[in-house]
Image (cartoon, rainbow, N blue to C red; front, side):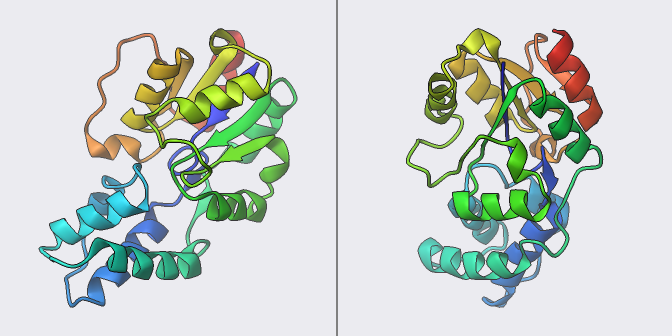
Length: 215
């Protein structure tokens, strides 16, 4: 059995650090900070899209590449200020790792993703980590998920993807895997969920263990 996890909004609650970093970047251009919830709704498709959306929301017309460089420098400093695993995630990953192969598939770059996993003693539970710069098309493209399935010698039918956003739902659909939606995360703040009814719905991390292992 293979269980693949998204990172932000699924394993760790990173919305405050992402929002604070985005807002610090905006203030360097003289803009007013955006609400934390508004920034959280922009997260999911990589830092460049986050920065572009934030610039637009703040009414700024600046070069996205320059703003992205500022954001990355700021976020590197803020990565671990407020970010923590969701309550129950350490126990969830420990219990699932004893029964299945666990991997991470995220649009966050690989280096900070690994830093987060290592900082919270989660890294040992995951056999692979694919980030947005790991050489595969980003979610919702299923290339990274399919690679993880093939690398483990498994198949889509025995794989579950766990994530908090519609991007994750679409990724699972494209790859033909089961989907467990982490409703405790901040992905649904985007307001774009369109579920079919065959998804597993987890209200807290402990639910993931029960749902994935009993279905």
